[in-house]
Length: 352
Image 1 (cartoon, rainbow, N blue to C red):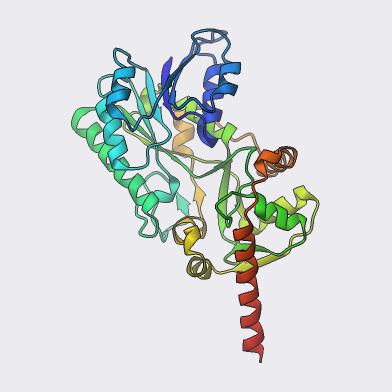
Image 2 (image 1 turned 30 degrees about the vertical axis):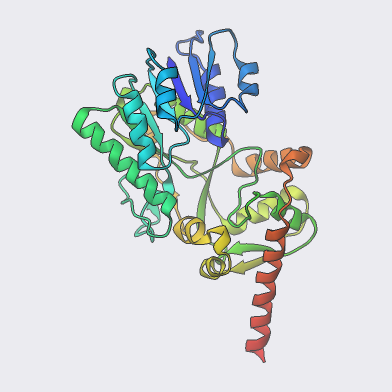
């Protein structure tokens, strides 16, 4: 199989790239050919993994420069094209122009955050309505889906829509509330015995997916004729509360958890710089359970293999062993202290 990945080195796409390079097209035969279209700054590990010359091809450039990209890909066609960095209708329209008639399947990475908010039913299938008034990111993904599915219905453009939920890898501990620099500052607060903010009362249901499990499902959809014209969500089957998530992080660190529960609406009002209106009210503050029946019909035998507590332990150990992942965020640290202090003051004032 000859595949072009646009991006290819993010949390989701790195795992897919690795798995695609290693997977057998036929029993005992590894003949997949991966083309990466990106700036080339993070391709080193994949170069090392490629088993032979010709397995991995790199096209360095910016896909947003459509004319340059068309020139660099002139004369090439692919069995599969997957764009991991398309977020707006303009970007998928560009991909349509670039790859119409040049690919057997175009995979667009949408988002499970596009599903109806507030939810009418906690159990989510691919037929759950798409509507999110709280988050522009999600509305853009919906608009991308609408454009691509119209091209499929009108012209047979071979699109498959992929909807991930919260997918993580070893480089970041998955959280509900964090600052611009990721999870480290919250991990550090737990290690230092400081209180940690959990949105809501911590009892809403959430689903985490390890990127290696996501990759197994994704590669099973690549080149799959039954996936053409379909939207497919890829998530794990394990459902947790946010209290369980944070308790698991503290347990992996060997530290007690000092949880402070704060309403998502309050966090959104206090933290406009952190976009908690979209990230919480438009996503993580909702209870979600995903029905993966459709995915398992399209990819027989697929199941999640990385239990959350195991994946979490891998992430915590990796971050503690890699200082480059320990990105300090003093502004967020101060913000957490101010929010917690404001709540404590309000309680004192109400109590008199």
